[in-house]
Image (tube, rainbow, N blue to C red):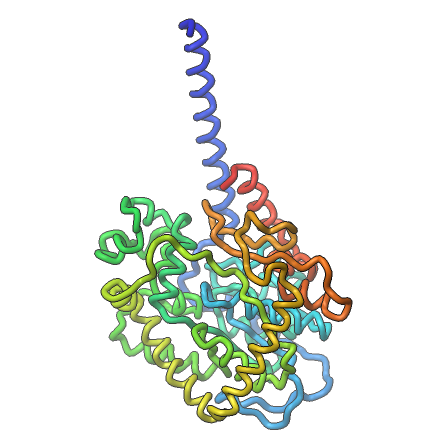
Length: 424
């Protein structure tokens, strides 16, 4: 190659690298504006905090008690779902979307994004088209929970629910899903970064690092508490008991069907209302699941979440006992039969597939940065008119469903465009 041509080639490559670096810096700056900073306190940031929800008088839903029992049985339509991360919460979100859409209920949706400016604390002003005194039936998108702010948006008889997961398993899922956007993981050099991190987490973890909240006590953080508390602090138990007072039902991801049966009973819903397909599920990782020593290390690293989970695992089974073991077994079997029937009716091939095999972009789930590890579905081409709408709604991923419901997602759409352009 002639020297002049080689020189031009190197100059062209250098210009490309410089432009690429500048463009990447611009995108990071844009993202930093799109993702809000963490609030350090729980004081209300909404100027009109004194303006409570003013529900339109209508048919009473009965009185719901803090322990989850209730008097009367009319379908409950006012629900707050505190959507935790990596807990099958997207599947539960789809159930709430369908119920609200079916009954023409009013959702409190975010504005511009698919979450309420997470990881900042929730404030009422973040709700799309919010006006002081506005009242909503359902709140269910990701947020960092702020009870007083949420409480002011729903009627007094609203049902509060959330879902937990074994903290070691949740940590594993969160590490793989969010790891690429947590800079402190970039220094990990092993092929099994999770194992390397757990050997000496204090060496790598910085509680003030960007997105570091994803990698320790994520449940505690999502629920609005300090995820860096000393596990022996009396505040930990105080917070756990506060969650128990505020939430009428805490579901468990590991016992999802049993949880839905309890939810159906609590809300006085029909079986069809809680049918589901597993959404936002991750493809099996080539790295082995946590076991033995690593599982124990992950649990110890997330000890606040472990204490929270143990408490509500015990209370969950007390609810099952009160419901009746035999009755629970019968209703779980009925739910699984109904889900299996819908699987045969709705899903082409009968199972979830890799992103590359999904034929309809409307069925394409949001993927983590740098990989396409989230599975999705293909809708059958020939579905009877009776089930066509239900099948599509059950299979529609969160982002597309939000758009179907009229949510303004300009930040999410812009971020997707940039990612698609750069093939991230």
